[in-house]
Length: 198
Image (cartoon, rainbow, N blue to C red; front, side, top):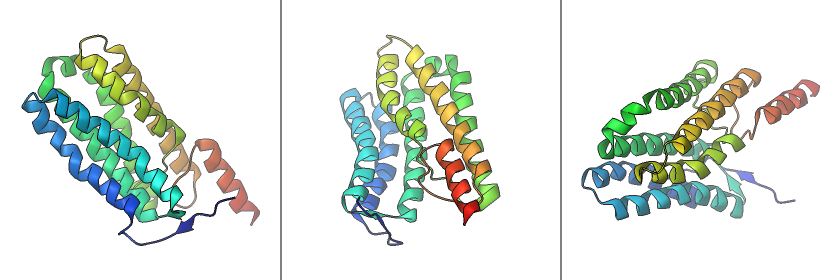
């Protein structure tokens, strides 16, 4: 069994990768405005890759960080907002047609943050399996949508984002103490059962 060690250090390789996602994500918008589709697609794929890479590096180095977990939460939010900005720049009318699907996802995301901030005075950093799974859908769904093939994958992605955020809200409700890296609501309940037995 591999042990993961907790550190409060900010300057770690996984955190630098996560920071690259924060810095790089806003560049999606000017690339979209300039019509640089190849660069836009390459950057988007790279940013999605960093979502996997930072976690891989943290596990490989056997070091976890609550700072890194919360930095990752911020990076995800910056990426999603930047991707939305790029889509508005590319296809304003099409975005307007899907506004209710997107509004549901954005509202649920904001509520998941608000619930954790109110209860724990901290941002949620659960990194659930559901949230990670959405990353596998967002980019292909966006590509198919921008290519005017189908909007249904974007709608599916927004629905799954909403469900993942609702699960995060439920996790916040179940937990008595703020905790990072809670894979699912089932895990949150198990954590609380273990705490009650101590």
